[in-house]
Amino acid sequence: MPICPKCNATIGQMDVQCSDCGFDFPDTLLIDTKSDPKSGFAHSPLADVSLIIGGIAAGFGCVGAIVSGIVALASGQFWNALFVAPVTFFLCFAMLVVYIRIQHV
Image (cartoon, rainbow, N blue to C red; front, side, top):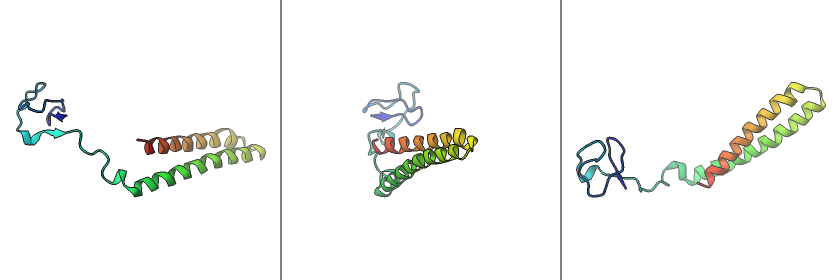
């Protein structure tokens, strides 16, 4: 569906004037929003490999945060065990979720 280049309102295929803002435009200015959204670097094979590697690294970060929290708790480093390790875990886990969701878009 074409959109108005001035106000981004959706317009009809044959309209020569925007019904929202009144902007006049020739047929050459109509922008088709159904263009190929899966092109460019963000959807390249290199980007896919980067997402896989990032997901694996985030998974290892989650496991490492759990292990370091247990080790810190056993050695009496309560600040690291009760604050640093959980924060690190949740940051890595959030990154892992983002990597997984991005791959399914």
